[in-house]
Amino acid sequence: MGDRLIPLIPTDRYPAPHPLLYIGDRLSVGFERRMGAWNVIGDVEANRPAGHRNQKMNRKPPNAVKKALRDEVGFGCPVPDCGSPYLEWHHFDPPWHVEEHHRPEGMIALCREHHIQADNGAFTVDQMRQFKENGKQNWAQVKGRFNWMRNRLLLKLGGNFFYETPCILTIKGKRVIWFERDSDNYLLLNLVMLTTTGQPRAQIVNNEWLSAVNEADILCPPAAKSLRISYTNGDMVSIEFIELNSIAEAAQRYRDANFQNWGIVKYPITAVEVTHNVAGVMEFSGNATKFGTMVGLNLFTAYCVNAIVIE
Ligand SMILES: [Zn+2]
Image 1 (cartoon, rainbow, N blue to C red):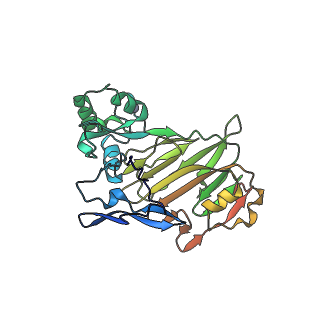
Image 2 (tube, rainbow, N blue to C red):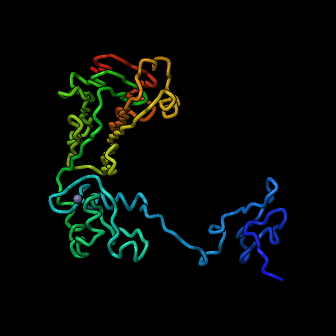
Image 3 (cartoon, helix red, strand yellow):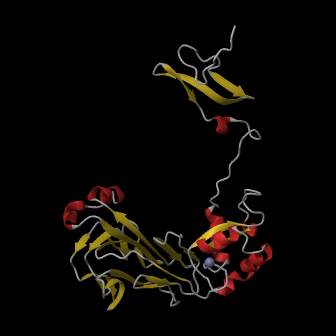
C-alpha cells in the first residue's frame, strides 16, 4: 500500500478519531461536527498546561507601570533639550528582545524620536539610568499642542453639545472655555482650569497646552489627539479630538444624546470632548454637568455667543 493522506481537519469522510484531546487532565483541543464538516474547537494555547504554553507577553506595559515611568521623568522626555510630553515606553535593562518584562527599573519613558534612537543604541545603560534619576528635575513645565485645525467644531462638555458657539463657559465675567479664530479662520481651543485650592493649574492657549508644576499625572499619547491632566485634590481636565463622518457615527458615539436639533450640523465634523472636574464643586463629566444641586445634560446649543454664563 502507498502512503495515505490524513486530512488535517477531519471531515465527514474521515470522522474525527479523537473528538476531544486531553493533555494531562486539561482539554487541549476538540472537534465538533457543524454544517457537515468537523471544526476545531477550543483554544489550544489556553488549555495547554502551564509550562507547555508558548507564553507571549503583551508588549504594552500595565497602566501602573506607564504612570510610574512618566511620573519619573516629570512627564517630559528626559533626553537633554527634548521634554516632549508625547511619551512611549522603552525597555533597556534588559532590552525586550533579551527578556520580555515590564519592570519599571529596567524601562524608561522617551518620546517617539528618542525611543527609536534608543532602540538603535544611541544611549548607554548608564546614561538611561541617569535620565531616570534626574528626570524629575529636568522640566518645570511640559507643553504640547493640538494640531486639529478646523473651521467648524462641535464641543462636548459635561454631556452637553455646542456647535458654532465661540464661548462655552464664562464664570464671574471670566472666560473658562472658549474658541478664538486665527487668520485662516481656524478655531483654536482655550481653557483655563478652575480650582478651589488657589494653586496653579494647567491651561490651553490657542490649542497649545501648558502644565503648571504640580500635576499628579499627565497622560498624553503620541497621537496627540487626547490629553488628561489631574491633580492630587481631584481636579482634572481631559480633552479629546475625534472626527465624526455622519450623524450615524455621532449617534453611535453619543448613545444618550437627543438628536432632535442635530440636523444643522454639517458632516464630517470634528468633536472636541472636554471633561473637567473642579474637586467637590463643579463637575463636567462625560455625561452630565453638575454644580451644586443643578444637573444638566443632553442640551444642544448652536449659534450662541455665550453658552453657559455663571455669575
Ligand atoms: Zn525626546
